[in-house]
Image (cartoon, rainbow, N blue to C red; front, side):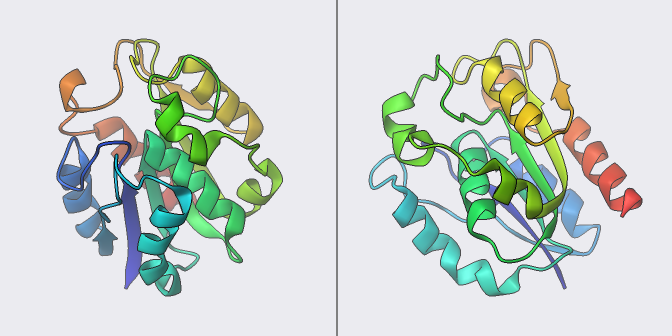
Length: 187
């Protein structure tokens, strides 16, 4: 069975935003989809999140899809840094990488407070899908722009989309789903 993962952000949980919708869409593509609950905001450390993810590491393959929203995107970048194999798709949605303004900079610091190893990250995913907006109240657009630049891919810019969360009207995310299907078709 092919595996997919959706990582929530600070203060998040598996049933929020567009996560249940995307989980259902990926299951229809024969993926087993995992949406782990990470400790947040209490005990929100990189080590604590890796401890949760450890249970899934053996199921990763070249067909794996990983999607990270907000701090979940920064965590996904940290996962890719440490991997020993390549996955199919890494989706980074409204993720902080350390460029102010970031509303939760202090809580996000364990994840983004030291430089990313962009070369290692780039080696561990076949396709990168980056989304960001100009009206994100939590993470400035420069984070998405720099992520796309460092990973040598395009930024999928959607104006006035906020933080791609329920508050911004995102209980579904058709644009992301289409980009995933495009990447799968290319592979």
